Image (cartoon, rainbow, N blue to C red; front, side):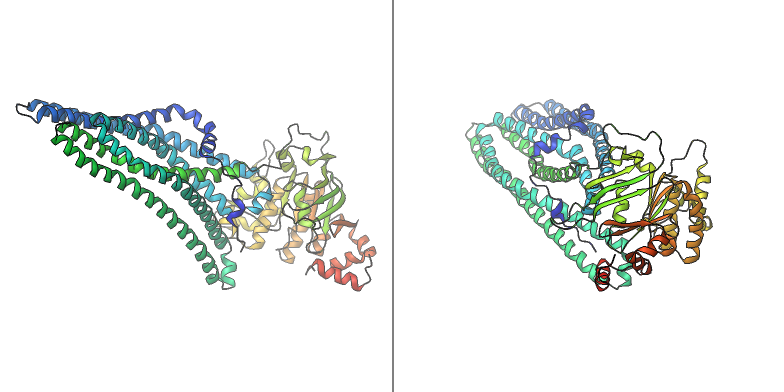
Length: 615
């Protein structure tokens, strides 16, 4: 199984917290009034909570003396009850104001990410593990939503509450307030170290979680292979290694956070212990009233939650920052294959396909390595069916992927009706060109949805009629015999169907699109001989007006073509009818003789060497 390393996805220079959060501005701005209202409600709740100790101070000073009034006790109790009710109402409205904006921002970010992933070139998806993208689109954005709805607001509110609380403490006793404030010094120093360690651990754990998700997905998709070769234990061992690495990272995160929380909780408690001794001493000397002492410690009790919460909220904020960094890693990836600003269109669309001196190398090819394609020249006339043959590894499938711009040429040009496809609108190009790959991909939907995926039906055309025609041409009538007919929902990637059935559904999908240019990558390889004959016979009539370029691995598929192009060493070696190439090209005869069991490039080179390198 392919192992995707998280190191390939790590950014070069991480942005600062301010830079990262600022980038959320366009998504936050429409909901700013509600978020601000939620913040004010949370702030109000914090201020109300701090007001209660001041009421207690007044009550104690007015009641705890000879001749104190019981009425003052009832009045104070009523005020405290009302303040408590007001705090509860403010907390309720905080949630009402912020939950909807936070969830809508999360949904917007997720949709934008999915849209961006859809438009990124295939080369991007070749390098990124699906689990990494899944964790970025789900887990990371859920963290962002929770931080927007709770973490960001409460971090600011807790900080403001602590500052206001300290002011109340200093009004009770400047000496006790100073003692409590001194405890913030070691917490502040520790916070700088904690921030760096926890941020690095958070990024590592999120990357490892993405790698683990990729591992699970690959194992589930490849479960038949794993079971067939009896490699369940080996797969489990590899998964166990990754799971334990993630566990160790999470433990490191937890230890870092718990150490910081221990300091955040213990230091204020120690300072309160010192303050209690000093406070009692001041009260005994008459320099501090009992009410002031009660108010000081009641305020300290109110601050205990925010002080302890600041540590948790700081950890949550750092985790969210790394989640956003991972999100923007993907969003910042440049889309190198996109529509031009001023697309062109053919005056008289005919479907003529031309390849002019086309060269191509994959983006991650090692410098100095030979290109996959080097100077390919080919003309496919409108309505013509051209077969592309060559030994394994000669670049046939790669050449086909250049036609719909799944990859861009690195040299030369691909033209349709005389226009470089890079000057065509991308959506228009891909409605002009229809593709059926050898490696069939179906979706967890109905057969009808899969077949009509790329069909642009003319107004008034019955979709069921187009569906039935495509299934009939592809000899996929088995779909009508399933439990729910063509509305049967197939399993993930169509694995509930056989290989031949999946291939026929994919072929029907390409036919239903009614393209001007049809690109087929060995579309009949999984079919038995009789079914292949039936499909071939119907394709002859269907493809009569469609320009078709198909990779052939069977002589019978080659016979379907009007002409044949022989691809050799990244170049078109010869073009002609099947009979013409058999008569004049020894390499073509060798390839045709080997089509049922295609040789490798190395085998053919050795064979050519033994024949004196004859053409």
